[in-house]
Image 1: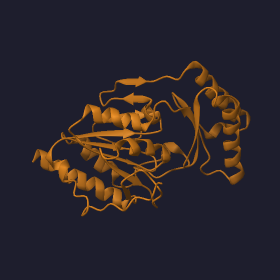
Image 2: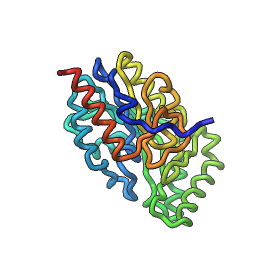
Image 3: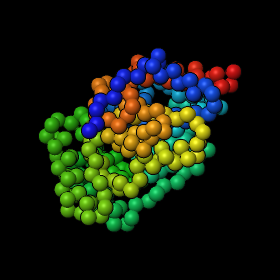
Length: 264
């Protein structure tokens, strides 16, 4: 049974290991680094976050990686960092290296056909403005809609899922502010494990807020520091809870201070 994680504070978690060698910091974006916005392209980081990400991106002992449900290139256009960072998009199906090399694990043709069907159904229902088209999934947002509008979005998605999506091996995921149809063969947990394999000696942490981050929290248990970032805690696989933005800023500051000792 999952329970709400205890609050993290810099006194109880000194991050001493970060100051002794390489570190790996994996961060979700929406709801974690940035508050939600009705217009997802206006979802900008909390005040003070951009400066800290910029500092982390320049520290040679830190590998900074963003793990998001957004498309990787879309997120790259929103993140204000001095040096490009690694991005895992579409819940781990897309990979954009800091050097700009892009790869994507494509869906099976039958799965893509279902997403096209969902896209068409949402448009026919007058919900085109709610659609977020991604390389390997399709999300429909209802943040800002009246209750009946949100119900309409969810009902269209559920109807397509029951008719063809489930049989095609797709997953229907309700997230904070919408619904998404995607393949569940790859998720944020796979991306996190891939990074741990690449940086086996690094002190690692993963920060996230949504149900999709639970895949990463689960696989990283006992292998990395996991932190749930939300205004209020909820049952989670994460080891600790951070309240944004104040706790989040304090955590990033603690990581920066520790990492700076490596190069001192």
